[in-house]
Amino acid sequence: MRHGDKIKNLSRTASHRAALLSNLTSQLIEHKRITTTLAKAKSLRVYAEPIITRSKKDTMHNRRIVFSHLQDKEAIKELFGVIGDKVADRPGGYTRIIKLPRRAGDASDMAMIELVDFNEIYGKDAEAAAAKKTRRSRRSSGGKKATETTTAATAAETAAPEAPAAEEGTEETSA
Image 1 (cartoon, rainbow, N blue to C red):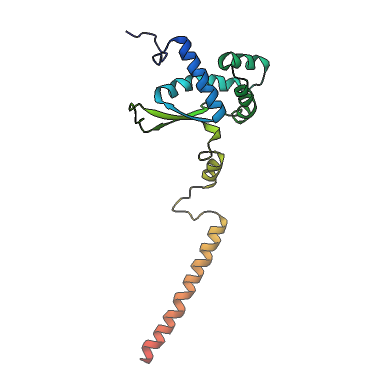
Image 2: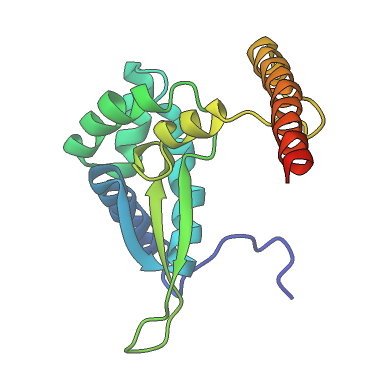
């Protein structure tokens, strides 16, 4: 039975697993996107997200706690500098896991894990473009300008059919 056994061991000892997750987190912070197996990516998300949450407040205490997990000065500079500023207003969910095709050698499930705020494709520009589009009802034409143009178009259509009808009527009578 596995009662209360919630940690994914990844077939490693505790010290090996801690070193693996520390290195993967440092590389994720440095490169903003890494490719690994799906099981490691899921374990990395659980390990890295509390560390990224610590970077929101740049205090000596938070830096020391993060350093005890990572032991990488460059990663900590990047985390508390660039990443901390970008994730300051995000309430959580700093990483995204995207499944990739299986690895050719051993058919292992692969995944790409990335920091959400550093993706150019799904960034704030795409959100802003999606926010600019508004939904319109099929019944109403829209705002004041749309009403004015439909009124002008209706007036033009009303006037236009009368003139050709008169011309057609004169042609029929003369023919």
